[in-house]
Length: 331
Image 1 (cartoon, rainbow, N blue to C red):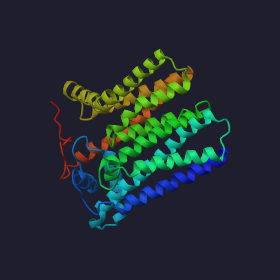
Image 2 (cartoon, helix red, strand yellow):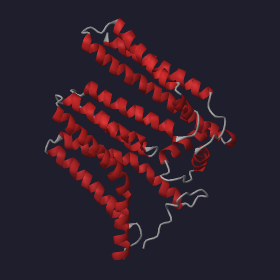
Image 3 (cartoon, rainbow, N blue to C red):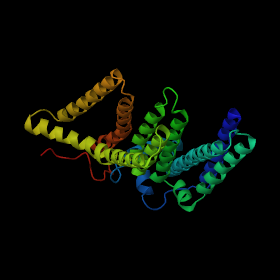
Image 4 (cartoon, rainbow, N blue to C red):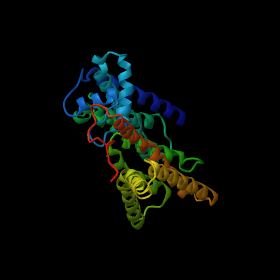
């Protein structure tokens, strides 16, 4: 019956995706709409720099979408709007699978046999929940225009889905690959919008309830850890990855008289070396949790590296270069 459930779940999920995506594509904005959409379309089409923080991954994905206009600039905006529609459809797909996962867990707890009736209840719950959300005013509004919220919702949905996949396989070898994937997707999502970081407390609690027997003290410890991880990503990795590099650049150029970029090169080389040493040490000592944590930080940094696109394009001095991040002075 497990194989039958998976078949029902997968096929129905893609049908729900097709319904939502078709509706969004049929109702997309034919060209630019209000708010920041015109700016995002302009920056994506020519890879220019929009308002801070720049949303570089969204810009790059949207640039790929404009290629499907096949040189017809009149259709560039429609292609980016279509990308938002497809991203929103994928959000509904992963929302469906999240709902069916949770429903299956509830029904399996109360019924030892997961028969056809339970399968229909589970899949039906997913259909109702996913499509009800698909046609809410706010989500539908974002699904049809060139804004970051559709792509951000997609990353939020898939990140939460990946931790549920880990929960399914938590007791199997190599289950931590789902945690690593989750961290990488979170790193990528920073290049779209910071909303995805709000999923961290939920991810920590799923890990806690799967691995430990819940107690009041354990619950509070897990809550504190979730806050620490959120703070580490939001106020540690995101601002200080580049701030520390800038500090090294000032030291090496102004104090040591070395060429430009020497401080940044030294910093990133030292950071990579430190990560490699941490991976080697944790693997050699059999510290699985530490090893998984270091790999997760590494893939977050890899995903976050999309922000180099902002500095690279700003140094090319494009016509639209808001906040001009490439024109700093060493002083």
